[in-house]
Image (cartoon, rainbow, N blue to C red; front, side, top):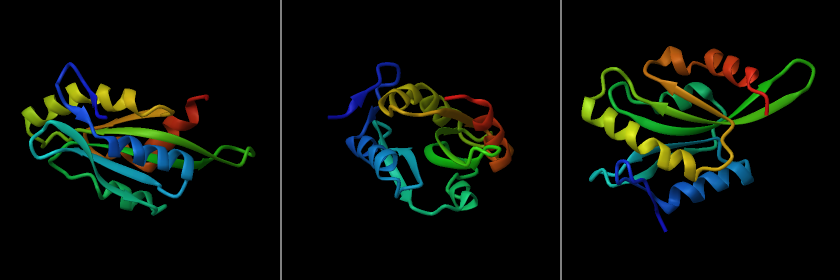
Length: 144
């Protein structure tokens, strides 16, 4: 059963929900990259990875195409030990086509609502906005 977004008509594939649950509960998957299907009717999983390498994760973001992503962000906060926050990324680089940016923007809420348990939302138009330091600062500020 796919979840449909009324604003854009784009559906969220069942695989997106299954992979997210696997990341959230299984803790093996570290990140998921989502994209639109070739006919722009459904949000689908492009890649999943168990890699802990944040730079490897960022390398999955094309310089001229939009993507959504989930990353299980692990960080240290003072003496409290390691913490994890599930972060939702909307990647919409300046060099991507206007039509693609609009479609991703109008379809985002369907995916965002379907993935229950997201702690922080990150929006990026260039790599400085999704750098480890920038995201670390954002997740450290949020209190959940």
